[in-house]
Length: 115
Length: 114
Image (cartoon, rainbow over all chains, first blue to last red; front, side, top):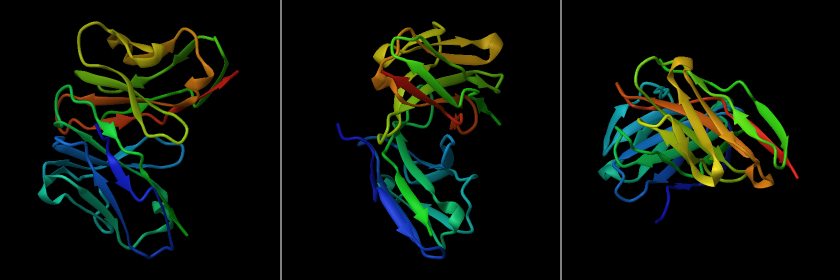
């Protein structure tokens, strides 16, 4: 079974440029999560989708970050414009549902460097 | 909001030594608890999880963890570590109410010396 797929794996951009990350969850998983992981820290949730609906985006900095999950499968996370402090690893995870005994499965992440 | 504390930031052990990594959480209600591991260059993988029942949970690769509700703890243990256990270990908690999101600790880096 294929795991969570993310691309690109690495991205280097200059500040003020836009950037987008893509995630393909495990087949059949209705819930998709985007996390931010700063160096030396644990992942922090940015947004959670149940199918195509963003059910929790309270931690997403909406002035520059946006996300979408059209058709309830793949998802894209965008930053525009990027700032130096956005340098981090962006993780995508999925689970069958967002409740109960479900385990979240993580992708390899996209390491963003903003110069 | 929930929070998770992992007090050991970096642990260095020799092979065959016993391991215990601390994890304390702040939420007082019903919780689900997890340990994830991140090997160098790899993605986060689930080691074990506790949802209910026996508070002593066994996971993959010989790891186990004990849920002690009175101490708000979920410490990870392994009786004899191997060089291949070198990795970053993250404790996480998910509550049963609200958004059911995962809250992670800051992680503990384990280095096992051959």
